[in-house]
Every structure is written in C-alpha cells, then in structure tokens.
Image (cartoon, rainbow over all chains, first blue to last red; front, side):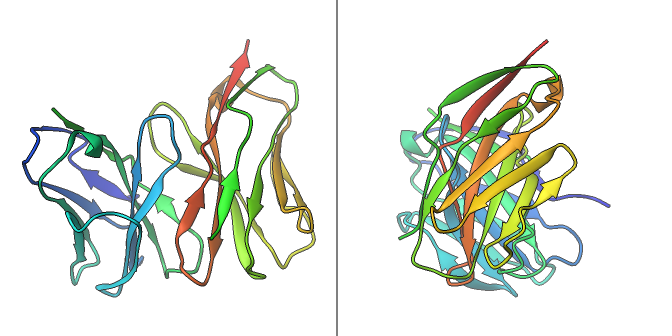
Amino acid sequence: DAGVTQSPTHLIKTRGQHVTLRCSPISGHKSVSWYQQVLGQGPQFIFQYYEKEERGRGNFPDRFSARQFPNYSSELNVNALLLGDSALYLCASSPTPISGGYTFGSGTRLTVV
Amino acid sequence: AQTVTQSQPEMSVQEAETVTLSCTYDTSESNYYLFWYKQPPSRQMILVIRQEAYKQQNATENRFSVNFQKAAKSFSLKISDSQLGDTAMYFCAFLTGANSKLTFGKGITLSVRP
C-alpha cells in the first residue's frame, strides 16, 4: 500500500512568490493535516481537513490556505512568501481527525531566497 | 493551552545499551493521547509508540516502552538494546479530541555509537 505522498520533495522560491504543495493521503484516510517544521524544531500545526471541510487552523497568517478535494488529497498554498517560510512542510493523514493514527509523508523542503 | 517539553537537546548511547528519553506535558484535558515519533535524516516522521491517557498500563512495542506517569504529566521513552538504526531525532507529541492537532516538543537528537 502506498503511504502518504507529497510533492514536490524540494522547492526553491523567491520572496513574494506563491507556492502550492500537494499531498495524497493513504487510501481510506479522510483526514489530512499540514505541519510546518523549521530546522531544529518540532512540527507546528497549520491546518486540518476532514471530509473536505476545515476542522482546525493553527496560528499562521492568512497567507497560508489549504483545501481538500473529493478524493481526499489536499493542497497547501502560501502567498507572498517570506524568508521565514523556509521550512519542511509535512502532511499527515488519518482515518478520522481524532483516531490519532497519523501517518506522515516525507515532506516538502521549501527554501525561500 | 497544551505544551510539550523535551528538556534534553541530545543524547548518546552505546550500541546494545538502554537509553531513556524524557518528556513532560501540560494539559487540562482528561482524555488525550501521547506519542513518540522518530525522524531520521530521511525526514519522514515515523510513529514509534502510542499511549492512551485512560490506560494505566504502559505501552510497549518490541524494544520500545514508555513510562507514563499521568499525575506527574510525564511520558518517557525507553529504548532497549539500542541499534545503529535508532539514530534519529525523537519527538514527543500530544493529541486531544478537543482540537485534533498534534502538539510536538522540540525534539531530542539521539546518537547510537558503534
């Protein structure tokens, strides 16, 4: 069975640009969460989606947005990129939001220059 | 607000020996889950072990076991018979049903020496 897949694996963007990151959950998982991990720190919660609806949002500016599609895949969008947005972006899927059985993808390494 | 504290930034252990990684947390919730995740250089966050707060029995997974002290809000991970492949960052994490988000500690870098 395929795990959680994220694309792209690496990305370099310039300040002010826009970026879209993609995540495909494990088959049968309806919940997708996004986390930002700055180098040397633990992941920070950005969003959670379940059944295509936003179920939670972390303390991130409105430049960050996300959505979930009918096939439960998800996109994370970041507008007006700042240098501080450079991080590893992790996607996690689970059958339901509170099942706790989160499986993570390998992440997208975003570098903003 | 929930917080997770991992006060040891790094540890080192000889291969085949036992090591314990510490974690404390703070919450007012009564129903929650605790996790230890491993993150090797490949970046993928891998679930090591999970503990439900309502269970008094400590969770075990092969060489990995936890010491869950609910009153003290402590959740340490013991790795027995350490192997070179255990070298990684280890994160303690906390989840409640109230908001369904994982709250992570800062992590600890574990190095296993041959």
